[in-house]
Image (cartoon, rainbow, N blue to C red; front, side, top):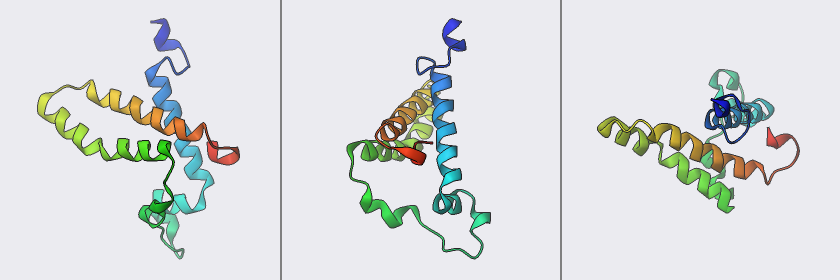
Amino acid sequence: MQLAKEQSEKNPVYYVQYAHARICSILRKSPHLNNFAYPSMAKGEEEISLFDHANLLRQPAELSLIKQLVRFPEIVEDTAKDYQAQRVPQYAMELATAFSSILSGLQGDYRG
């Protein structure tokens, strides 16, 4: 019960929520990403595709995050087939960990 109350990376729920909050913060601070995340805000501005700059992703942590993101449809499909629901929160933790490893190497406003 104590772990559920703890606000640290030991608590998986808190860890995933914290990663989500950091992602939202980054999206709010980036005008280009806001166009993608909130299409209604893109009126009159050039729309930016996530794949326009995919060639810039070279760091191992970035590639690890991309590999995690690509797994999502498979995770959902497998879970729907065999009802192993624990797979989804485990995936969320792995995704949050991959995202956090990128942010640990960044500085300034980009850290969320």
